[in-house]
Length: 141
Image 1 (cartoon, rainbow, N blue to C red):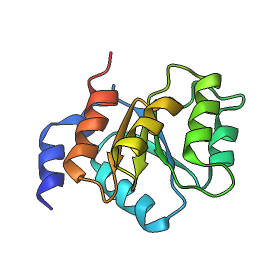
Image 2 (cartoon, one colour; image 1 turned 180 degrees about the horizontal axis):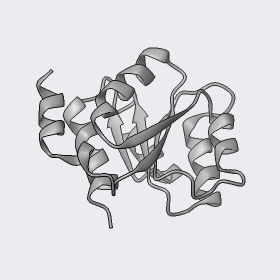
Image 3 (tube, helix red, strand yellow; image 1 turned 90 degrees about the horizontal axis):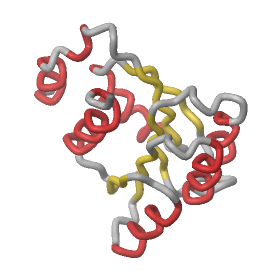
Image 4 (cartoon, rainbow, N blue to C red; image 1 turned 90 degrees about the vertical axis):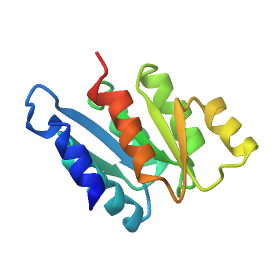
């Protein structure tokens, strides 16, 4: 896939000083596997939560473990909006990117109102995921 060549050519994966933990909150196996493949060229360790409650639980006692959260909005138990609000209460500085099929204006507003720092629409653009990771992790001081 050409995308992998583009990401690998940046030399990021060989630089040991970059190491990040990403929490992927996704109940759909295919969605998670796709994100895992897209991010495989980056020096990141992925952790998965399959619902909003599990995502919140990941932050109790470990508020600084993660560098980025990729949050699906439609989740069982606790939806992505509520999970985002709770996580931001625990760690206000954690960047959270909403991943949603509801990319209409109200859905986008709801993401930002819940505390998301950014959003990406499903089906998502692989290049946008890569740019978000670069923005929030690779080039962040």
